[in-house]
Length: 380
Image 1 (tube, rainbow, N blue to C red):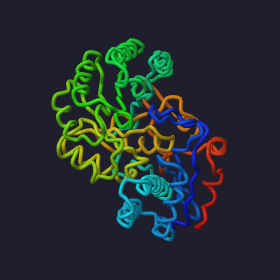
Image 2: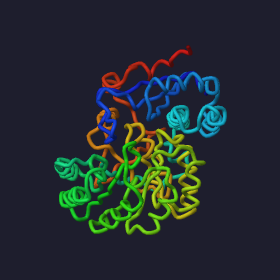
Image 3: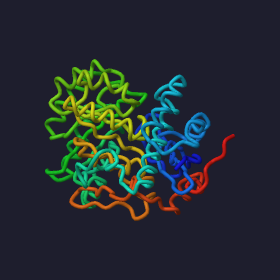
Image 4: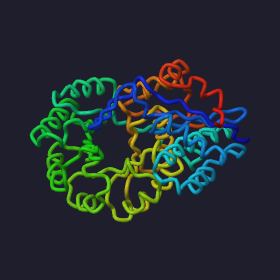
């Protein structure tokens, strides 16, 4: 079965706030769905970048795909090797991330198997999602926490907003309020969001904050430092009383390797829509496993990214949590039938491929190309 074409659809109109200093609007397009076509099947992927950049990448990548058999890892590695000189980690790598997901989805559909089984087996059939939402100084997010716990979530991550940006007093007040808004047996994680371009805090702040968080039973401290400060992360992990996580801005296994070798993080958080896709996270996760580190994918993206993370959670021994953006139409509305959660856990689909079907009405309402599932885009 040969690949016949590529297509994509940029999502807009419901883009969630991101917490950055240069804030997003609902009409900004930073998430793009991609499709890889054969004569009989279509595979789905998701990319954390605009549709314009994805379409530009398609022009470079299409000659290496059309006419090829559906072989995910070989094809994805071929794309990486033939485009590294254009800038590893940029828009080309992000587009490859979505194509890789789509290739695995296709491979599963063609073989009649879920992706996790094709990746080697099933470690779990359900996984705990953590509802991810932004902080605010008025503590309105506490109402959201209570509503999400009522809806069945038992794990939560809050961050960005004013955290680390105004005062230590406000930081602790927000953490205290959040801890009091949920049950004692529910998990709470804190994300400083230090990849924000306006971040100004340093190692001393991160260490002092980590000790404050330990007093509030915080499960992990995420993005506590600017993302390139590996030496500071090594020190922070050594001295912090709470686990340290990060890595959402890193791409490909080569970028993660020094962080793994030096033990700079307790929890690595590659994003399947940025870092190179399912194939790349698989390499990263097993390398981390050999060093006693965890991989819990960053998931501030779409329902397709979530579906890929669910398959990875089934196939990897240490991936026992996944991120779920609370209140995002790109997660809640795109999948026909929605998601099934029981006792604070999401069921991992066992249907072929990624195990999801997109809702056609949502695709039309939220995307810029309602035909992307049925018609490959032409080469310019």
